[in-house]
Amino acid sequence: MAKRKRESKTALVKQAAPTPPMDYEALVTAIEQAHQTAQRQAVRAVNIALALRNWLIGYYIAEYEPGGRDRAQYG
Figure 1 (cartoon, rainbow, N blue to C red):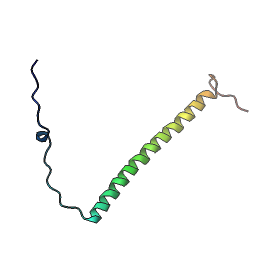
Figure 2: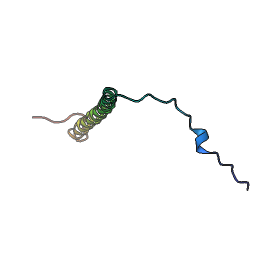
Figure 3: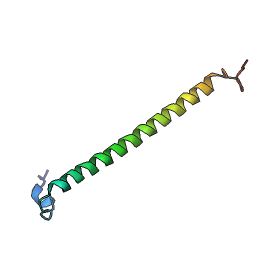
């Protein structure tokens, strides 16, 4: 069996253009934007999970109440 030729990692990584140093205001803005984006994604994920949970609870109750009949008996 022939050995594979190993490529160097440096050949696979593109060299990015040097970025100018960030001033303090740009740093704060970048951190705020990253935080707000992550927070929005987290809130959205929680809202989806809670909506699904509530729908499933309602579905389970609606299935349980009739006890296998077409309609539940009330009153």
